[in-house]
Length: 275
Length: 275
DNA sequence: CAGTGGTCTAGACCACTCT
DNA sequence: GAGTGGTCTAGACCACTGC
Image 1 (cartoon, protein in one colour):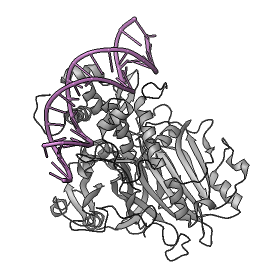
Image 2: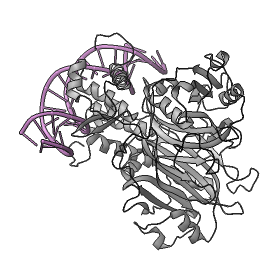
Image 3: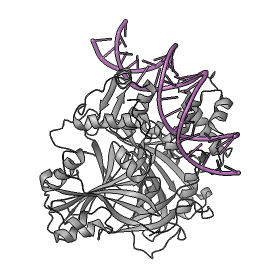
Image 4: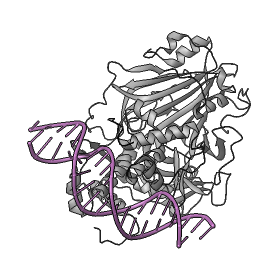
């Protein structure tokens, strides 16, 4: 292994070999890889080099590492679909979408709604000089001093899956609304507090690695790919009234937008994303 | 540093300290961090521990590492907005959106459309037994044997930014259409080859770390957070006719969906996402 | 308890960038 | 050439998991 001449680093060649073995079925989905000391001996490289290769494949969602247990080949993704209604500011949470054939058993922890699910306030931080606060002020056409902010977390299937930050040009907000732990749909609560109706202006989708704060909120390692959905909602007369920024654990959830009416011909035999 | 008792690992405490210094302005945006040996000496930890902390902050898009030069505090993101028209299958590429105050200078390499921009074929792989191929077959309600596949890359601002895979139940496809390097909008070409019109059925957004193949195509390190946009388009009678899967470098581009008509009141003084 | 992955150190050599 | 980050090794100790 170490004798093989190449300009690509050893750990990446090792990662490629592991991925090839997975694709070839040598390590089938769900199976345990040889332990790090074993791989280290088999390939004749240091254990740290093995770890570097394994870490890359873990970030690419090819492997799943369970501390004290072993490293496993990830089965095909099963993710929560979050279906968005463009009219109301409402999600349809908890619909489980299986991305692969129907005979794949559901992994544990991906089932439907459980106790404690839903949205809850985690903090109401002062709107200061963070880059996010400045961005919110810009998007709403206000100064940071005019804004209030609320941070929430949405739990699905018992796990925190979405971290949210809301900025509104309403100050002060009712204290009850900001109480940590307060449950309930925050968009509706904010619209109610401001006494306005809200309509989508625009929404944008991006992807970023979890920073240290989001990693803690969502219970994932820093750097985990997060789906970021941000946007502005307006009152019916077009005044920007809400800037939202949501961070979603990318490996466990996805946003689905439907363009055709439900009940139409489904050529895939009902196997499309849950609605 | 090393004497400080805590159950959080040393490298993460170091990462947190670095992030605090960045937030506090000790290391301003765009500035160079002390070199790894310097940080190693300053904090009294091994260089590998420093590297672990820096690597986390790099994946979280807080730092940018330039080999042989140094490690820098990332300036506020400037990203290409990809605006989607829900009717046609068309993008509006190349519109640059600045996420932060307007006096921030544009970094190099983020300007408008340059030579070589646009979509080009990179491969027409056989539709075999990969997990993606199976998923495409399932979504289109076909067997893998009935499908053709084309992979393309879209370049914006001179850099590859979007990797695409298309599956269609048309076989064989015209050889000219599959020629590596062939430029032009692939959705339109595929619709033309099949002699049909295409409408959106659904689109889903997710986030995932780049696997080894996508990392090479996009010129980013494996594990880089990618925005994944996938979906099915139908013919007007509702027959699934195209499954698309796009992977977009999350740090440099985002998808924008507009819900209000253009020309309406823009309370933010025209500072919203490019249209 | 044995085995797994997680962290940390010390030291070495290399490839790259800029001057 | 000097300084930067990139890779790799050897060895150690720890925390977690499951039997």
